[in-house]
Length: 268
Image (tube, rainbow, N blue to C red; front, side, top):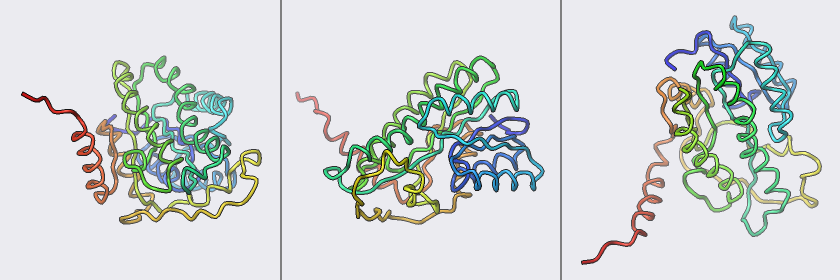
């Protein structure tokens, strides 16, 4: 996909952070966009910004953990704009703390949004994209935490490792349809993920307050616009991996070196 002009994008988690930056980046390059999020006032603000830029966008309140919500999102997107060419499964939440103290509510909430949200997006949109025979691209937002494990991020790591593996396989499966796949793996970005609890459903809240402090990430904190620009470039160039921080390369190398060293060597 060498141009977004005349294309239609859908961005979950599109009301703030990386999602908002993706929305505005797509619009500036000529796309129409569907903004999906739980925060209706913030979505309305993003749509207003799009219109100030002379672009077209609609907002659809969507809980990505609910398959029916995502199916309704796909129906609305196609009914409004006729097709979807760029699907950005970007919505995500985070919890912190050691795995031995993780609650069932932590597991259920994080996996419902970070993993099932991506799966629901694929279930709802891929059949429509394939049937349209117009090609396209899927961007799944994972994390550097999907490539390298970090103490105190076990629940989040689990969800993001799954998204990376899913994306790697998806890229192979969708190649015959002319649909590309990218997986976004940033480190620190100036978003509101540390206040994810604001959107946590009441039935998945922990019965007692937990005091785990957010993990401090190494390296720079990038602005969402810089990360979105890297992601959009990867879509145009049909690159699978989008790794935003060179500070993470040593940790990635160490991980794969340990894997390589674990393979039994043939002996003479």
